Length: 147
Image (cartoon, rainbow, N blue to C red):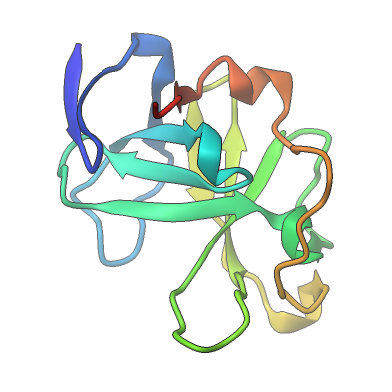
């Protein structure tokens, strides 16, 4: 099917659609999303709503911000990502207390709200040399290769 996104109309396969387990605060009517990776913007990904083309969030693997979570089991939940707020003139930081956790097997994600004491790391962007996207997540990622 073709879906309206911030990048225009894009073909999205059924296996590339993610559903949110419980609604995101402030976006309760949005249930279906697609993860978009733009080759020239790695390690960042876009979480694009399929229900409202005007809503998308910029994400990155938490490890690129030095973040580790005590209560999130990385073995059972294959990818932890964080929302990135925009702050002009400041170092790029992650909002580390509200990570999105993706389960590639189920095609679902949920937001975890955690206390500051449950997060290790300062949340400042320090890109790693390797791209941290598990194979299961890659098969569900819509990859754009701009010319």
